[in-house]
Image 1: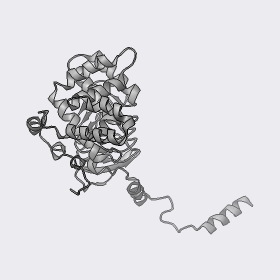
Image 2 (image 1 turned 90 degrees about the horizontal axis):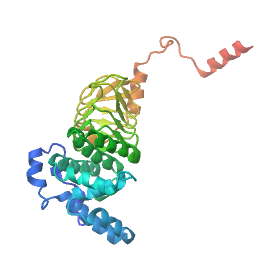
Image 3 (image 1 turned 45 degrees about the vertical axis):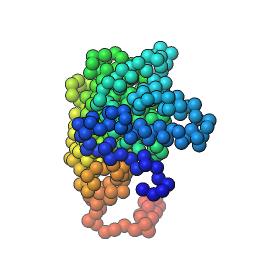
Image 4 (image 1 turned 180 degrees about the vertical axis):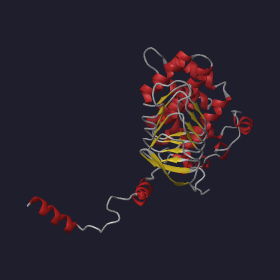
Amino acid sequence: MNGDELPFERGFEVYAKGTHKSEFDSNLLDSRSDPIWDAIREEAKLEAEKEPILSSFLYAGILAHDCLEQALGFVLANRLQNPTLLATQLLDIFYGVMMHDKDIQSSIRHDIQAFKDRDPACLSYSSAILHLKGYHALQAYRVAHKLWNEGRKLLALALQSRISEVFGIDIHPAARIGEGILLDHGTGVVIGETAVIGNGVSILHGVTLGGTGKETGDRHPKIGEGALLGACVTILGNISIGAGAMVAAGSLVLKDVPSHSVVAGNPAKLIRVMEEQDPSLAMKHDATKEFFRHVADGYKGPQSNGPSVSAGDTEKEHTNRTT
């Protein structure tokens, strides 16, 4: 670490992909040992000194609270409130879930580390908790998911509706989503009721994990650990995207995708096998050149075995036809 680098700027290995729950529970749920919360508070203090006009905002959102759960609950309640669903009511809901659920406490920390590690626009941990709607929508979903599983389905759906209205991200509360997730930008993301997303997945804006019609039951995609879904990807039906797979931006996927492979196109086609084990960490989701090279290599035109035609020959033929 160089002399100008703050300790929390390097990230925390304990939150990296692969951390076991038992390891997390024993080391991190003790409020006296929470490096991410310590980093968030330190960042907020530094930002308040550099930008005094934001000092009240930073105090209300971060510095007035005793733990990450309280600060996050406050931010979410104020973002999602409306005239009939008051901030105080939402605060009670978020506190009631996040302060007592160790799985959610683990997930919100692994998620914020994912944003810090993989999103170059995420300047700090505090910027994620204060400003990034992908992170906000994901954590609000986690509370709605808990409520759904407790049988409080109407309240869970009310939260889903507000999340969609405020953040432009629609996640059904019954969907199952792992931890260490990045929703980069998040705008236009739709995740259906029976979708399943593994740990360490990165999802760009405009991604749809949808069904294929009016069928009921298990009808949405299953995304393996460490997969990367590029911008505006559409994946339809009860199909599997293998662990460590990469779906290139703009692709339409209607069939299973093997683990550690790259697919692209409409409909998506297999381009190559991945060398990277976790493309979600590398965040390289543009396979356009590879895709068109693949298409060009495999294409045989109707005159592929005949003589080549020059531009001059084409002009002469056109002249003969028009005279």
